[in-house]
Length: 340
Image 1 (cartoon, one colour):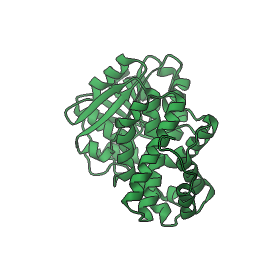
Image 2 (tube, rainbow, N blue to C red):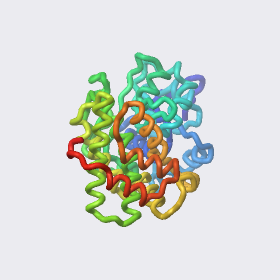
Image 3 (cartoon, rainbow, N blue to C red):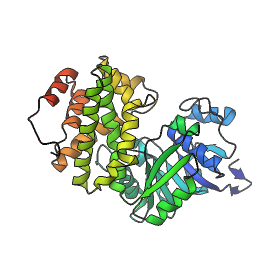
Image 4 (cartoon, rainbow, N blue to C red):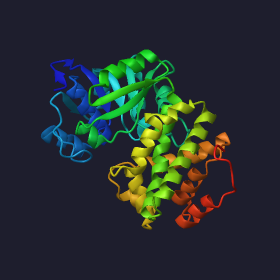
């Protein structure tokens, strides 16, 4: 129960967003002994969670721990949770937290959302910082982690980044256990950039898979995709070594080739000739790469960075360019040195 007389129950953690990832992280935190309040956007899902304690919409087949309570009132969560975890889709972060922004300063914030804000090209921690205020205590979590496997307690490893080392270590201690290993970093730009761009590149990997171009093509693609991400990261001030870690190559490999990847599946469906709009319209869960492609394309143009894979994916998804024509335009580009 949230209310006891006139007193509001206090929770260790409030998780904003009951998608698959938000739910899985809420389960993990509860298993570690934390009291968790999970905010649910959809009314039918909220009612189902109250009665059945199972997220049949996004993470079915798991009974949620008793230490998780549910609410559809964001103000209640903001008022009663000591720490806040944000797990909404990237396009909804600003609009979701803005109504409770005055209650968030002074709380520790952990961003699970990966992507860029399409209109501003800001990273998710930057969006949260704008809404909450310049002194907001924000960390970000990224790395190769499917929600279902975390819920199953399969071994998983991620990285938490913040400019404030104490904050990173705080969340590291909160989350880490034998099945969920957590590293820390101060490279917030690199960790967020890797987490966002892997969704874009996974769509390309899915297209190649759907067209049955083979493993030679996949190996070449993923290598050049990583080079492109590193190139953008260097321009934005990230550390190159970050992209060789969990939030870089680790998350890229998982999302590009893992069977549970929504972004990879989106690319496979594109290869079948389906339109991006139809795929998204019929998709129950969010395909972050669909939204990130446009922001990444704009960011590359703004930064003056050559990103041919991102450019072609943008043209495929938003301009209807023929897939094989697009791939041909990439493979017939002018000869270069590998580090270019």
